[in-house]
Structures are given as C-alpha cells and as structure tokens.
Image 1: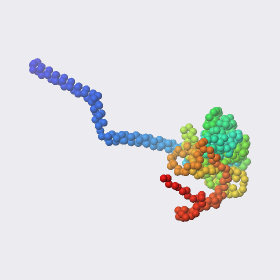
Image 2: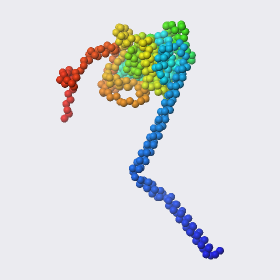
Image 3: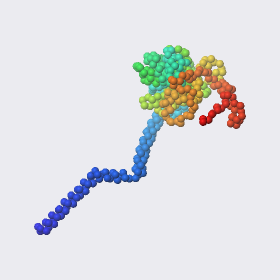
Image 4: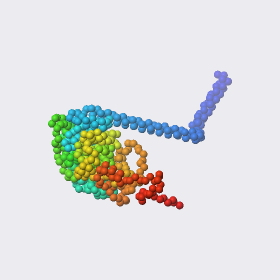
Length: 501
C-alpha cells in the first residue's frame, strides 16, 4: 500500500478515537451530580407565583377527586336505599289481606308511603288485627328492639321496687332524672342502672312474661319467635337493658307487648278476622295474665305520654287525642333501624300501632311520624273526643292518667332536654342544622355540682283550661315604646343599667 495512504488512514483512525473519547467525556460530565443539582436549582429559580399556582392546582385536583368519590358513595347509598324501598313495595304487594280492615290498611299504607318499613295496627283489648303492612317483616323478620326494651326494664324495675317513680337521685344522681323523664327522653344511663340492679335472670323473666322470645300464636303462617339473650354478666346486662342487645323482636310481638300495657296486663293472642264468627268476636284469647302489679303499668303511663307530648316520640303527637308510646333507634349489622310502639286513646285504648323502619327511613324518628298520621287519619273512627272534653267529663281515672310529668322549665331548657334525648345523637346526624339561639338555662342539666330540684313536676294537663288560665292571668303588657309615660309594675319595670366608668 502507498505509504501516504497508510499515513492518511492512520490519521483518520486517530482522529476517530479522539472524537469518541471527547464524546464520552461530555456524556460523563452531563451525568455528574453537580450537573443535576444545577438543573434543579434552575427549576427552583422559577417565579414563586408559578410554583404557588402549581401547588394550588394540585390541591384542587385532589379535592375534586375526593368530592367525586364522596358523590359516588352517596349515589351508591341512595341507590341501595331506593332498592330496599322497592323491595318493600314488592313485599307489600304479596300481603294476604284476607280478613283485614280495608280502611285501616289504606290509611296505614298511605302513612308508610314509599319507605322501607312495616306497620301493625291492632285492637289492644280483643287482639284483632286490623292490618299488617309488609307481613314478611312484621311476622318473620325479627330485629333488635333498641330503646323499646326500656318498657320491659321500666316494668321490671317498678315491680321489683327498684324504681320510685318520683325519685330523681336513687337511680341517677348526677342527671337528676326520674322515671317519667327517663322514658320521655329515652335516657340510657337510667335504664342501664335499673337493669343492672334487676339482674340478668329477672330481666329475661319479665321479657318472657311480656311475650318476647315466643310466637304470638296469630293465625298466620311462618311466624318468627324472635330471641332473648342466653347469658350476660357485668355491664353487658346494663347495656342490654337500655339498647336491647341480643334481643330479637317482631313488630307483632311489640304490638302484643304494648297491648298488655294498655289493657292492664293481659297478654293476648292476636288474630285476623277471616270468618264471620271471628268478625264479631270481642272476647280476647288470653295467653296469660302477666305477673306484674297493676300500679307498675300505671306508673309507666306518664313517661310514655311524655315521650309523645314533648320527648323523643313527639313526631307522633296528635292534638285530638293522648297517645302513649316509646321510640327506639340504633344500628343493627351496619344498618339503621327505627321503632315506635304505642297505643291510644289513653282514656279508652282502641288502637295499638307499631312501626318499624330500616335504612335511612329508620332515622329521625320516622316510625313515630307514620304512627302519628295513622292515629290522626283514623281519629274519626277510633279516636276519642278531645282531651279537654274528657278532662271536663270528670273521669277520675283519666285525670290520674293525665298527671304526666310536664317539664317545669323554660322553653329554652325544654328544647335543651329534647336535644339531649339519648336517641337524638343518632337521628340528628342525618342533616346539619343551624344552632339554636336560646337563652342560657337557669340550671345546668347533668351537672352534679349544681344542687337543683327535680326538673319535672306532676301536673294535670287540661289543654283548653290551661289556655284559658294563661289568657286570664297574663294581662297584656303596656306598649312602652308608643306610651313611654305608662305606669309599670315592679315586675314590668325595665332594669336600669349604670354605665361603667
């Protein structure tokens, strides 16, 4: 080969090797940490406003993702609730209405509406079933009784001489609560103390006497017998006595239980009038006479009436008649359940109404509202005359029954008591409400440092008479703004405020 060509090729190879070496050095320099740090510093040198905007946009995207997830969860929950309500409507369509009273059934169905629940309407004296809306749930689906178990606890405490109805310290010294307020506002601590003192065995004995844990004997098929707890000890007995832990009851069982309270202690067998003979039947089939003193049933009346008049069951209140009832609200297996068991009119009970609802319909004491509408719509047929007329008729038994514990506190204090219902924490959670603007109460409910008198007084409640007396003893105050020279009495004279220097 020509030496010149060899020299040229060698030079080319040398230049190529030099070029490769230089390229590798450049790449290595770019990979050096100092170079990366330089780039990061360049990014940090971006304007602060740009960085803040990027952070804001990132936070906005996260918030939007959370909002969309929450909306999706709400949509799924609403879909599930609607599916449950549709399922209940399909169950109602399958009800066997043979022997039911058409008017009562129509009223009960309208009151329940498109909601997930069941309704039992019966005669508390004869045991005749006027209507059972959603028979599947009422007869065959046993549920936790929640606070309705307090009816059993109260009767047990009274019969065992543990409860003095007028006493406010023996059972619950810190809250100054008597039996009437404890029932009206569904106070858990009170009934937990009572249940603990009664004891597990005696509590179960009273529950069985009142029909829990056994079939009612109704002439319908596939009735559930429910369940009573097998064994509990310690505080579990207390909690069972206020919340109904491990009890399972049907709406029909609650109907016979409250009927026994209405008729003086006879546990009757309910029946649907499917034959002409049953249609005219008035004498009840008594399963047994409950071994509870008659005074114990009477002493429960003020609290049950108070529950409807101003307590946890006030959504059932009816101005045309006096209703005695008890609410219950709790969570069972992750789902809400609400109950209301009741009877009316107080002077001559002719209807016992039980409502049980589930899911969203079990909250906010919706079952009490359903029962209240049933009593109202059937008032012309089954209701009594107004309370005023009954009181003026001079019936001593009715006057004793109406000696219910009406709070002797201000309106603001009574609102505070109602807000303190031990079931209100569950039911008020559904929707936020604006805080009430109320005057500071004179006494502090539940503060053991304040020595106060009982929060309730026994008083007869003739509504119209009370209205008349109010008008009579409350003369109109002078219009001081338009007549500043009007003479004021000492109680009406405005307070003089001395300016602070």
